[in-house]
Amino acid sequence: SSDCEMIANYRVPAELSAVDSTYDGKSIVLGTVDGCVSVLAIADPQKLEMKEYLRTLPSRDETVFICKQIFSFLGRPKGTRKNKSP
Image (spheres, rainbow, N blue to C red):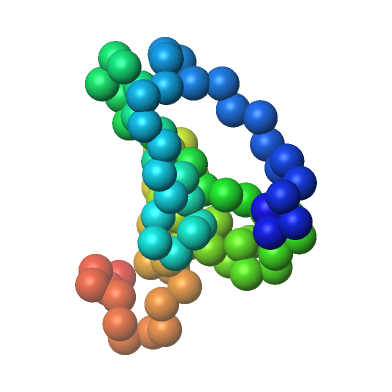
């Protein structure tokens, strides 16, 4: 976080070989000796804009992704849906 307080504890699956941050400072990228790359969002609970940023990220849970797609489709104004019911 901006005040240098620890906000999370993450254990890498193998020996860490590289660390970098994204240009916007919202994520860090970790590389390990086994060839894996992880991108972690920095979810600072003190920053209100981070809640919105996290909300826009894709979910790894397929059921959440499918529900978001359904709600996105159902939430469209009338006349803009691709498949109209008769």
